[in-house]
Image (cartoon, rainbow, N blue to C red):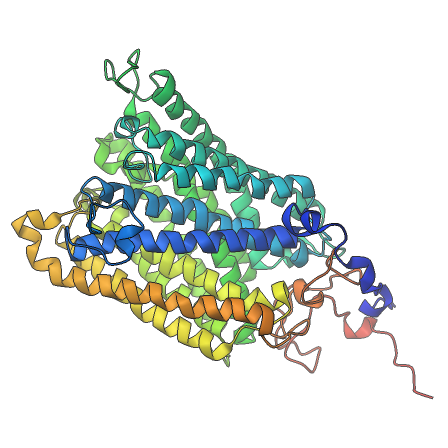
Length: 590
């Protein structure tokens, strides 16, 4: 009979405190937890910048060519805060660029991936701590390059997709491409680290099918990054050479790339689209799979029930990732694609709805019949599920080539990806911050203000994004600064004004989150090791964990979702708690 207990492995917590100078401990740190928090703070700052850029877009659509109070001074504008005609394209280009490459991807993979992976698998750190540190600091050249691109001419103005030959007409595009390259290198460093850590450094007893869904989401995401990112990075170098050296990868015969360079000819603009979307469609799943995993953990914890269909959830994540590599062409249905090839991409895209549906029904099965605890993280997790369903259903329309040709350049597309990536992923990220905040900082965020933040954000985000479906069905074009120039769209101005004020209120609501977040870091109620009474391994470590994470050697006996187990009296059963038959007999007190 085994007599292993957690107490048998307790070490002095003094052995696990941070050591070294301030710079080596908190700036150039190799500790995965500090690096994760560095990613978190950096991405939250860029989240604010991306939100302000979005308000610039919305103001122009609500009050064309009018003065923007306050915000007009922060963006390229004519005198008096009026947006300049050529600046609108920069606004939507940089809004999408910032939100995708500097917020969503690094906050999921960089912040939560770094912080949670070793803690949830029982490791003391990442497999390659120095490489992990470099993965963060390689983001800083990207921050500077993207930031500098704002101030060169009118900024990058070819959309976040950077389609040539339009993208080869702007000097600011050079800084944009350099930023993209550094983001790619940073992500590849992270993916190598995550894969090695998850495969090689799991605690004793932590089999692959005892991993939480958060780790499965990070693991599959790291595979996507490892295989897809080199393609985009190579394509970025090719476009950079077209821009600065006059090569002809993407430039048609005889087209002048700049005033001083002339391409040798023979390039294919369509080649960039294939290379870009070969990465960027898997990138959609890089931006959603970790969120799916984190939501699964939050739903199970606050439903106090085992996750419904654990293995089908794992296989569906793998299926989404696999299919994600063979559907990139649905972004190019309007490019004159061969109908046979278009049909192939169309069918593959429709098939990807199946594993997504499996996950949705499993989430519903998890909360069905449960006594839900409506904490702030749970509210955000439930919001993710409902908003993801709306975003997923609207995506089915785009999978059909004939429908997509009509709606491709309309606001229906904008509605779809904002329901997936903001109403979906961003809400999951908010929930994850509230959920793991006690483990990160050792204190609790305020629940009352957290719920106020949730309800206001939920109301206003639907006020912004749901009417976009209506705009799209009547053909309202995206990427145009003044659609009202056409008589057809002038009656839609009041609806756009309503959406703009909802956007302003939604961004303003985030002040509540910011105050709650920073106040709670210093003055929030202190949290114990396991304030949510959760089962997964990270909740057995101190809050916040010291250097080395655990003050005992974790031994894993079961999966992470054993809520309501008949083997114990409590409604939770941590992964490190030995089975009853293996527990040592109690010694009578003398």
